[in-house]
Amino acid sequence: MSTTTQAAGPAQPKKILQILRRETFRQTPAWIFFALAGLLINLIAFATALYSMQVYDRVLPRQGTETLIVLTVGVAIASGLQLFLQKLRSTISHYIVQRIDRNLSVTVYDALIRTRMDQIPLQAASFASQLQSYETIRGFLVALMSFGVVDAPYAILFLFGLYALGGPEVTLVPLILLGILLPFGIIQHLRVRQHASKQFASSNRKYGFLVESIKSMEWIKANDLMANCRRRWRELSEAVLHSDLKSREISESTSYFVQFAQQLAYVGVVSVGAYIAVTQRELTSGSIIAASILAGRILTPITSVPMLMVQAAQVKIAAKALDGVLALQKDSAGQSQTLRVETLRGEWELRDMQYSFKDRKQPLSIERLRIMPGERIGIIGPIGVGKSALLKILTGL
Image (cartoon, rainbow, N blue to C red; front, side, top):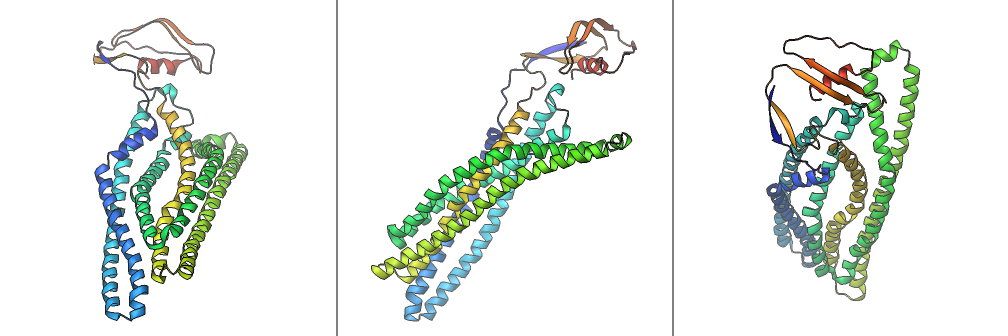
């Protein structure tokens, strides 16, 4: 057997979030078009608020039907353009997700097939469930990028518009809401983290047990283990249900509180604007309507912050589990050089070889074994002495 050596430097395992960020930023040109579409959509929404102000302040007092027709036609055209841009932005989003998923799935699978055989857990189904968790992480990061590229920046733009229409008092309402929702989101994030880890582990065990039961159905029935398997399935189902209900309760309570806060903030904008209009007469009814529309555009990204924090807690657990998979030792781990077979003659020679099993004290020990080209030998012995292990060692597995 003729061999050559080639360098195989120690590769540091990358974190799944690092890989996902790299793949996300690779789509920067698509994100730019995504942001431009979002800019035009938000500008049209700003124009809609101004349309309402013009109708209430100029059209109604002066009964200007011609002005109303012109404004309405213009807004209708702008709304049609907005619909087109929304569909375009959705198409771009699907393109980004498709590209990220294609590259990321290949990266994860490549890490799997390069993992040493003795590093792969015996529960294959549970292991596969851990690998699929990257989909949850990918969805969250895309949503976070969409929030940072489209929603949050233009919320600041609408905030300036709200200040111009309603003054500092009206603008203060959504800022107060942000000050309330940020610590609330942090608290809910910490609460979810306590249950998400148990839920993730329980779900993987349940899925793994289900797949293994299907694969071993003949063996289960032949050994009359249906009652034991049924009891185990019930225990796993109850554990998953308990942790899932806890996490769902936190998510639902977060959603309910966010809806309550959003409605309260909307009422606050209208009531503060109306109070200023009544007491100081600095605001018109049209300005109040336009301010309420802009406030709605501002409140949407603000109220999404707690939900993103709750999702981030679940994503951290999934990322931690997937990082554990990516950190498993790969083939040729820790070796500065590896062998590459150029010609194979079929000759093997082992001297003073020992292999230690994880679950057994007695190692596989071979003082000397030589197999000549073309020679046929048989390896005999009871179960568990290492016959299969020897074959795996000879083939480099």
